Length: 168
Image (tube, rainbow, N blue to C red; front, top):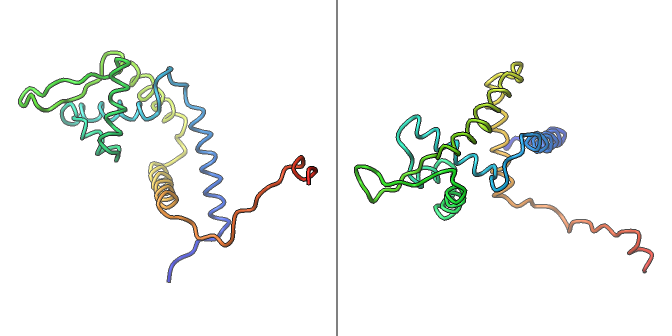
């Protein structure tokens, strides 16, 4: 038998998601030409540089769980605005690696390191376990909503505007 959550719990979850979107909207505005996806790429490049070696395009695609064409577009955007650069691997010149430029490091320091550090000082009453649970719940909700079509009865109601009613 499957477990069914109460509808009120689902409403609470969806309201929290709306609040989460509002939270994202409160983040510092990005410079023109930079997107949240671009920042993710920068953060993964920094992470891989710190933990291993400068990443390949495929390493970033795997971490972001996107296709190679999708990540290639993001990489090209960042390269065009001089945020990252490509270079050949020293041992195998056929392998192309990525690194942040000085401008990319400044952007990463400001939008990721400084802002996240400040936020960490503000959220001291939230446990790390709660953060992981929240993130996992949102990921599960997104996975479910993006891969399953709801089985609703009938057709969605159509709203007639007052001007349309008066013309009948």
